[in-house]
Image 1 (tube, rainbow, N blue to C red):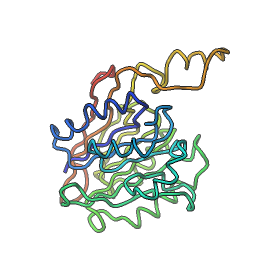
Image 2 (cartoon, rainbow, N blue to C red):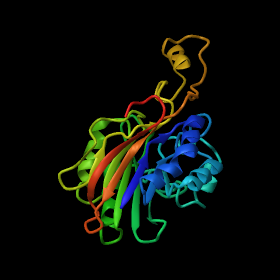
Image 3 (cartoon, helix red, strand yellow):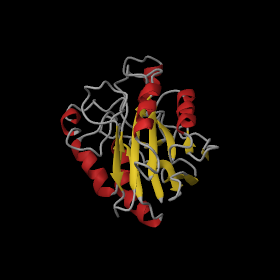
Image 4 (cartoon, one colour):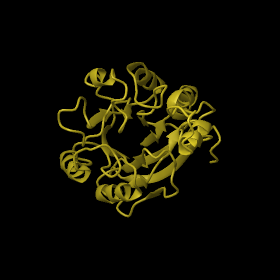
Length: 268
């Protein structure tokens, strides 16, 4: 069982790379299940629209996760209730539209995959306690009882929260990946109880930028220059950044984890 997880898709550049490369990657690498974090995929780099989500599904995504920008496109609050394959962080308030986790089937219907979307508490929008929420969900979705495989997308700012969640789910999930900071970390590994882990899997966007945003304008903003404008995405060739987890059919745990770096300026 091969699970592909791609980091935050950033604006039009990231979408273009998904459209150009995703279906080929799925076929060439024999991917069984694909998760994309789509919360930065709108033209502004903030939020996701119905048409973008539909395009990702058309290209082969099975589930789209998100984070703090999920409501930045107003239409999302309506269609997320109709599209259970689009997740928002589970520790958002209980009256939030949509769902924070779900159980999905692989395209061949052979396996059930639990996908959990969480968001950190530190330096992020105010949400419910992510560790309490994680424990509740962990008690509900049990590996090899309710599902065959489990993947956790932890959308957070700080490495310590991400690492703590990784260890919390170690042995009870197939993989835990961090998203949000848009820079892939070098700690790709399988934890001691069998869960694949990477603190941040990076973004699918133009790395000749400031975390996906136009670098010239970003510098103007840091220098507080009057002619700076609102952040907007860089438009160069995007790198697809993520990981591939090979899961064991018997245990649901990871046998192998491999970094995926495809195209653009980021070196493999």
